[in-house]
Image (tube, rainbow, N blue to C red; front, side, top):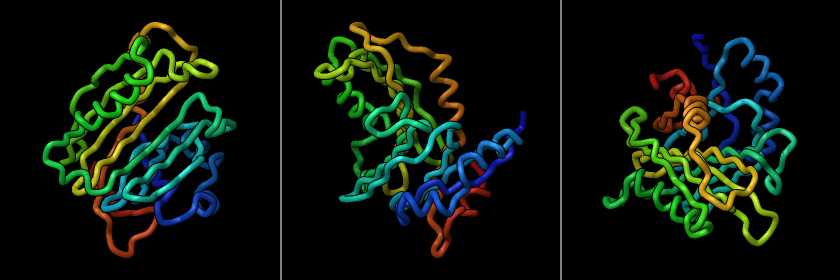
Length: 225
């Protein structure tokens, strides 16, 4: 099937969550458009660039924050919350990090994996999906898992698809996490599932910010991938 593309500005660092939801397409309207063959894109201004990716079905925005050179936006499945979720979609930005000559997307992802490993050394696992290119921007993808991600409370496992992108000035990530039953041993990598989720998020693109341009950011939505 050939997918048409629908620009959807879900969230913006320049407007509140409630304003974005009030002014943007409602999720039931978006689902109707999906059924008509549209692929729904989100475009979010984060520091020096616009980050575009395809927004998976079923997620709704739940949290957004930008401070001290860090940006984060989190979405959960409809009916779930930030406190109790089975899947979470996160995008992030770190300002000015691209100027560090010793940092690469793979090393950035390795730092994320290190946090997992410290939390669950006995049930930790990670699988590299390799280096990527989004336009002229270097990227790296990996799946990172903890068999027991919450050892002090009700135990659960957590796995994370992390796609890290080096921008012109900043670093960005698109993350798709899921929680499940706890496992005392490392979780076996499911190539089919994570390859499919990676495909769902595409196309991913970084675009320059155009002075005075507002949502739905046509310079990015209508440009080449």
